[in-house]
Image (cartoon, each protein chain N blue to C red):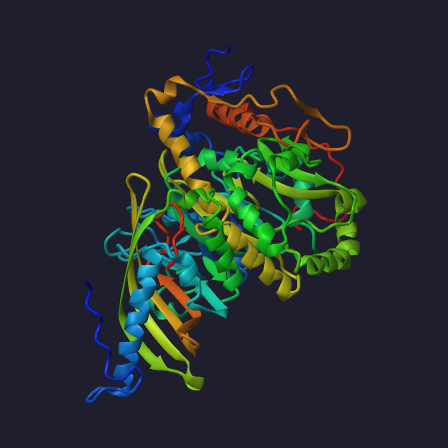
Amino acid sequence: MKKKRARPASRKAEAPLGVTPAQALWLELMPFYIREAWLLDERRLTEWLELFTDDVLYFMPRRKNVPRRELHRELTPLGDLAILEEDKRYLAMRVARLDTGMAWAEDPPSRTRHLVGNLEVTPLEGGEVQARTAFLVYRSHLETDHQILSGYREDVLRRAEGGWKIARRTIVLDANVLLDKNLSVFL
Amino acid sequence: MDNRRKYAVLDPATGKIDRRIFSDRAVYDDEMEKIFGRAWLMIGHESLVPRPDDFFHTYMGEDPVILTRDGGGDLHALLNMCRHRGNRVVRCDDGNANRFLCTYHGWTYRNDGALDHVPGKAEAYYDALDRDALGLVKARVETYAGIVFATWAEDAPSLEAYLGDARWYLDTVFNRRDGGMQALGPMKWLEPVNWKTMADNCSDNYHVPTSHLSSARVQSTFLGRPRLSHKDQFESPNKHAFVNGHSITFRDADDNVPRYVHGVSSETFQMFQDYHDATMPEVERRLGALRAHRVQLGNHSIFPNGILGFRLALPRGPLQTEFWHFVLVDREAPEALKRVIRIGSQANNGAAGMFEQDDVDNWRQVTSASASRLGRRYPQDLSMGLGHAGPHPDYPGLVSERYISENNQRLFYQRWEEFMNAESWADVTIEPIKARFEGTATMQG
């Protein structure tokens, strides 16, 4: 029989001795991102959707080749054409699409592995937190198609009932021309 | 059959087409010369280079090209190849510069292409270098309503003749407003697909209710967009016209309903209707009553590789294509409307677009099949609606009897054959302009 997991001494966010509040926040958020990665890789997308606030902006700008001295222009701003500029309803629509049985880009579905790390946490005003993570996502599709998507995410997290929620996600790919045939997996 | 014709790949009696043209390297190399070296190619939009000395890096086929606006405001299309050894002189996607430096030996060009500076001109070259003859290679440039086209062919007809009566339809979107349009983008990605399949699919209205049913279905549920079925498509009153290898679908209905673009939903419909109504007097003045009220451009492609408005299928070898996705919006439209169109467009098209992502595996497997020796024994069947297109009393070009047909593909590949068999532009037909262009809109906007 499986052993019951030991209950942590303190279930609240009280930092254990010798852990700073910043470290405690980091310790709280890293499992959040690990769980998110498993939800995506296990295709539990309805549960994944619940990680986002209803007013989320899920944004992936384009990334341009610009001179080093003009790096402020590297990412296209909100208002220009983005790769993704989605609200919760659009995200929900994308998830619902996969269940129609006719979303050919993902039927049969991709096999993905989201590796998320390099977490950096910065408290913002009003109790929100900025969390930056780097990712490597491997996607294998059909017989031999495969792709590595590399990049970072910059999230704004908000504390909500049942844990943290993502109120804004900016995804920046380390690519200019995307090498994949399409971008049909979530990052 | 004319035995000088090297390419006879489409049987006009049966609509069978030789699959070889989708994968053969020698055919591809010929295309680079006879199609991409000859045709007027869409390369950009004036709004991408709005100020003096702006540049935008683009492609004509596989060849890198810098679209520049010089200090005097004139546009140039310059091959991005230093005349010395061939290094690129621009490595950025866009910017503002009046000189381009070759990072190899320092040859420097002005943004009108002239070779301005050569290190060691006197000391190493003995002043014997003919700098005037060594400017960046220039293409001919012409614009249509802000869209920039270029060609390498000295003997090409004018862009106006090249577009011909297709412009009569294109005007209804691209030449609609006094303030013109504004280009956003491009988003760029690489697909394992022959470029022609993308181009011919653009006006393949037959695939939509199968390839895109999942997206259409959730968009009905979530956004209140109309349902999509084969029945709707087959019974559609929309029309499909063909001019000079360009393909134009259009809605023909005088019901004062705005054009059904990406972003229209039950919530946003009124915003589109209000804009449509508010701008109608201007549109009528620019295009005349018939086009303003009756003709709404749908899917269309501009031969060879301009797709669905302002998107480019840039060949990258016979088995790969780089796709560039732009969105064009009326410059003077309200910001809220531009936003809705921008978001609707990225949600549907582009690498992550719900509609577009479902196309790719279909297309790439068409490409793969054409590389198979066995597959090549069995031609593609493009017979749908054979013999059911002709002149129309009201509309220019050759018009398909039905909205759903493969007239689109057959006419595209006929044009392809014509270009591939031509020795020069003298062998390529240009249909005379017959349409009546009512209103004030011109090639220049």
